[in-house]
Length: 292
Length: 303
Image 1 (spheres, rainbow over the protein chains, first blue to last red):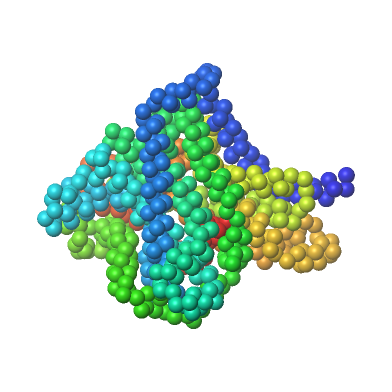
Image 2 (cartoon, rainbow over the protein chains, first blue to last red; image 1 turned 90 degrees about the vertical axis):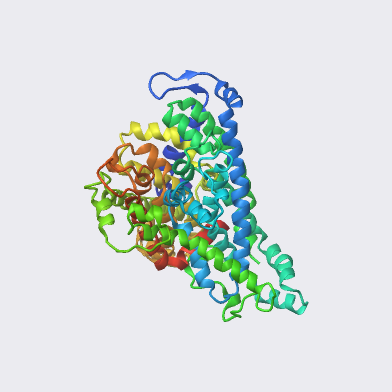
């Protein structure tokens, strides 16, 4: 009884957040799981269809296209951004001359809204007057001018360039902080051992920042899995579904075609995939692991 | 530890007053690395410069001479998209919609998150550990997976096409992350002041409002800064919840940019002006709060 009396004020403290999260996160999540077993047009009765939405997914070529494109996104984009981010972080660490300028230059795009960035790049990719083709034609490489967003063999690559351009600054800034957190004594010891800069990077810096490297890679993978804005603005999943991704296919299925049950099944798959990656991240990475 | 990064002045102690020539001072790779950095920085900055310059150019100039600088710096395109008189696109209104949603989300989210994080750090009550676990798990849930039920739920509350409805959704989406970080911060906060106030007969809420919140202004502001970016840029929920033109937020209005046909001679120039309206406040904010933003991002990744 006494315990309960002590606990009561605390329950009042957590009540607003708990109620909101129950209503706007927990309930929708469970309702997505439930709806994935129904056929529903948004109005009228919901028809229970069991696992039929999921078996339909198995034979749905667009779905497989979306899933594999999402995986390609989640592999290529983080790999490039984290590698380039690591290079940048190492290159501008130790307060090298002009590091502030580079830090700002690479970080500004991170702050911009995805829609703006996507619109800007869509204009630059435009076939007749876009910046890229104008440059290529201007230097006589007309043959390399592409229909960047309209050619199904090129479109996915073009679209992936955009989050890469936008987000390299993010791993850079995080890895820079980790690299600068390495105690000076360790560098001194390495210097006394006579290592060259290459050995310093791979033998000292990278092993010491490995937890941060793992963490930033996971965050990038999760972010890339959820790509939506860029696809909506630049290609709407086309041409011929070559840039279709899970988030956009879910949106189209549910909110454009009105198949809310089938859309929920896509949402469940997306949830499972992202959750599997993110759960490993939340469980595996701890604040303590980045202490020295 | 990670939370300290947000409040402390500089944590890069190991390089304080260190060499400024960088790793590569004596290396033969130095010219190559400098070259890569310069080219990379240009690739990062040029498109933004291109965006800002195009707001002052006519469509013909944008299309035919993309590299030329504007000939006159008239603010007319900004006025046109801001007022919407000729375009039918009211970016002034969309701007304020975005500002209202941003401000309301921050206030609501920070209020519930600080209360909850404080209780989790200080209180001993059954369910505290479970709540923490649940919050960590919720970080792994993609917001897309909630969209369909949220669309109907928000609709059943009559809050579709309402800035308040969008605010509720954003506050809930951002709360778990904010609660977890605020909890970590409060756990590091010395408890003595609060105990003294308790002895003076102050209630839990009184202690929280009169003592804890005032001394935590720094970290609370830091959490606000971290969250500004995604709220300002959010498209997905704005797209599904806001169907009426006059409640659009900036990202949504830019994504759906389509000026009334035949009313304007420049289409692209105005589109660039609209994009600049969404981007310039973020750039200003970035230059003011550079350090906090960088350390906040870092903290999020260390979590």
